[in-house]
Length: 105
View 1: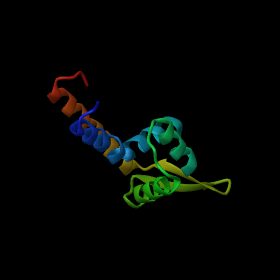
View 2: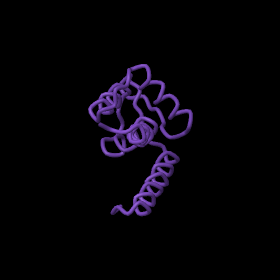
View 3: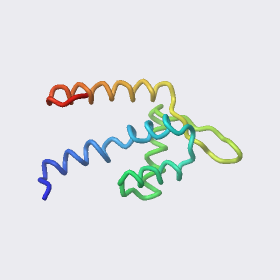
């Protein structure tokens, strides 16, 4: 049975940083509509509602991590240059943490 400490860690690294997952998904797959992103997050095991997913995406746009574009009458999300820089910085921090903890990064 997982400890509370582990569950806090999992929540912080996982749901607390969904933006990392969104950027990774869009970097691998290219522009996607909101429901496509939410579906992929669910496939990764995140139990999020549509409302929460769209709030997350809107917040990421307002933060400058994502940009929106219209294509065929649909709104698609893409990673901004600022978002890509933040993503790379966060990955660097995670790798440093793993090195500190003694794991291979």
